Amino acid sequence: SWAFCRFLSCHTYNGLERLLQPSYSNYRSNTGFSPESLFYRGIRLEVRIQRKESPMAKSEVVWPLDGVYGKNFRTTSSFGWRTHPITKTKKHHNGEDLVGQKLIRAIAGGTVIKAQASGVKKSNGEPGGYGYYIVIRHLIDGVFYTSLYAHTKKNSMLVKKGSKVQAGQVIAEMGTTGASTGIHLHLEIWRGRVNGWSNDGSGYADPIACIKAHVATGLSLYPIGTWRRST
Image 1 (cartoon, rainbow, N blue to C red):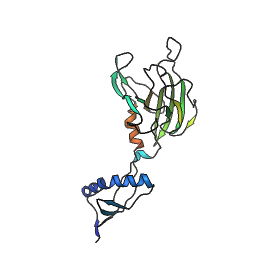
Image 2 (cartoon, one colour):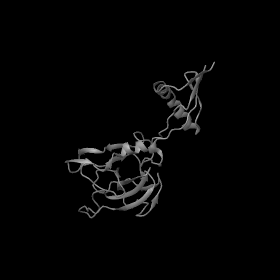
Image 3 (spheres, rainbow, N blue to C red):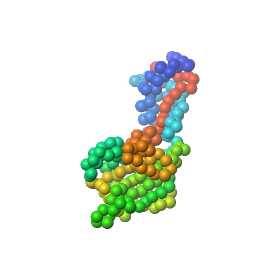
Image 4 (cartoon, rainbow, N blue to C red):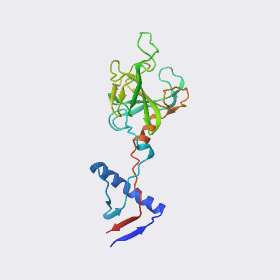
């Protein structure tokens, strides 16, 4: 028999959504379609559903390295206060150090505003600081950001100042140029049209939190009038 229920309470529906979300997400990711009938513990649930996109899920944003964060690549030094690995002094780390892959990709579409060697020089004449680095300006959901990719491998840059890039486009290889203790990507995200700098993290976005917020599908189920259950 069918049971009809209109005007579900928020509490009731939230419970239903928690039950359905994993099945819905798995089905959609595997088939590309949005189901209107799902099974939960042998019970068929039919729900009138629509996709509800997060406001932050409009522009395409991707991870700068291939694979899954925490599985195929990982953080070795997080955004925030730390003891600097070279100077051994307490400093704010304005980016995220990532390891585990070779190719570096643009986190979003935009325009390259820097692709160069740091002006700081080591005693051997090679660039210090960021080493060979790239800065890209993005307009993500109407907000300007810049992303900075530091310590790239010498002669590996595939873009130059003024280049237009797409989200996920390979821009360089991971390296250990500049003030670096090993091969890694130092990724910074600055809030604004022109890349800036601060000694306490102000003006920056936590790269991992920022990317996670934007790459999240924002997909949600919500009732638009009626849900039905059959056994």
